[in-house]
Length: 388
Ligand SMILES: *Cc1c(COP(=O)(O)O)cnc(C)c1O
Image 1 (cartoon, protein in one colour):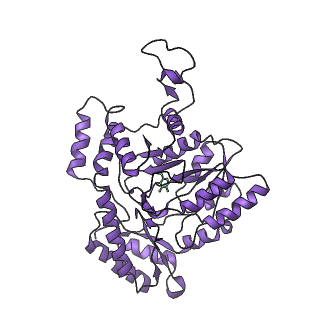
Image 2: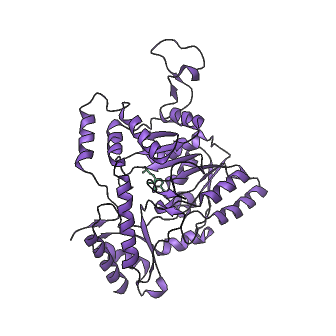
Image 3: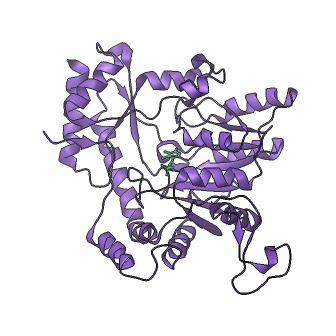
């Protein structure tokens, strides 16, 4: 039986040649490919600055650091995300809280955010940083979120790990029109890959400079940033406490090569999503709604089971699909219910929309090289899983 995963990278001969060429070159790290990849992504996304790093998790961490997040501050994000969107706040010693999701887009709900901000202002606990997550590749309602940021004075990091190649109101996600920083992930299940890898985009030169420092030990070779005169050509100064979050040349070469196919990848994902929409129309499932402002990257295609119309339980449907060789997944277990977060005092029912989503959601396979025949198998397996 052929196993169909929920997501998978696409590696072609051009990717392999690009990586091999780097292996034979002088630089395996800190050479010309990383700036080339940064330039390619910045240009595609119409952002002024791009900084490649070794993961989106690292990108989120240095983004928070550059925005000055620290002890006593709050970071808010969505409960329906990967844990990294919240953990970055804890890395900085800040506290984390969540805003419930919109029941149609599954993204952080701007109305819930407005209500929570009003309460937080009264008790003096406004967030310093908000991390809206573009779930499945569909942009959050950034205009509404940005208006609230103007009113309450918080900073915005878009977690666009799912969303490279997507658009919001006709403009590329990553242009930071409504945010301070945008973060991408290049993990192999995401839309384009560098094996591990991530990127920070910003239009703010000061934030770009800070993230550059935090990415590489807090070390500068720029005389203008030094605290006293340069000692000689060997000289550098450590002026902050940073990390080694650099991307390698091998990864960047793969990234450049993959970026060339990004438009086609997202277009294929849209074809597949439209096919799923049609094929699933008569089944007791809710297909992912697309906001008219959004052209999603379509990293994920989560359906919600209409459990009142199905004899099987959510878990039975999921297990049946897995037993039939369909590598379905669930994105995500609400972060506030993870034991580490539960210990901070969060209760599952605090974010009811997130809990309702978790009880019904199943991510069906979607990736650029999924064939129509494979997709038909997924749908047949789902029919069996629901009926039996
Ligand atoms: C994958 C993912 C991350 C983390 O990405 P890495 O590159 O694996 O560190 C963060 N946030 C979201 C929403 C993700 O899906």
